[in-house]
Image 1: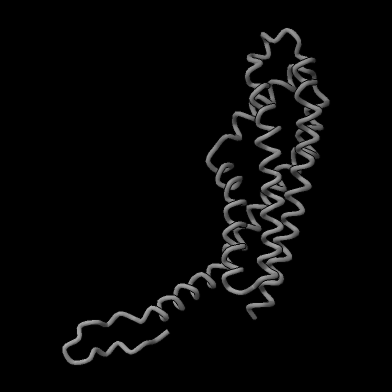
Image 2: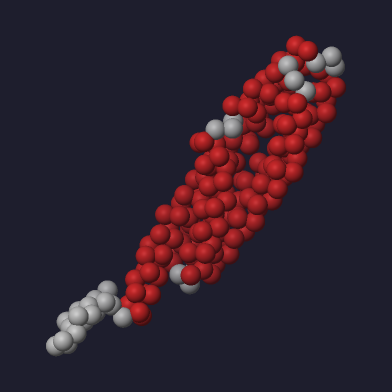
Length: 194
């Protein structure tokens, strides 16, 4: 982007015209659109993979154990997952997908923005399921206290397990579908920027 920076005699202004600034800003946003879309796809894939790992290994493995092992392990897992790396990816998937929608739409790539928007909505539903069902169940399990002092471990486990496992499968499906939508958005973005 170039503009005439030569000042007229007696003039001290060398600022670019507003239209040039707007074009530079738009170009900068357009350049960021691809990397943001890639970041959203990676974060969504990590979340889908995390939920899937619980579906196919963690929960079946715990289900094979006794009640005390199950409750103790889930209490420890729920506590240890509350860390910065998890929260960065957990929130980053939503934020990056939403920003990708905005940048792609702004760049005039409507179909890319549409697929990124579908992914954002799917992940938003996964967030609602997490905050509305899984987190309250995790909190109830933590509030049950030390498994060595719980009188009816079987009841605590039964209240937690069925609903938590079912909603985690739903989160896996939502995030996997969101990942597919972002993959489609990446393909369309690649075609549009060739």
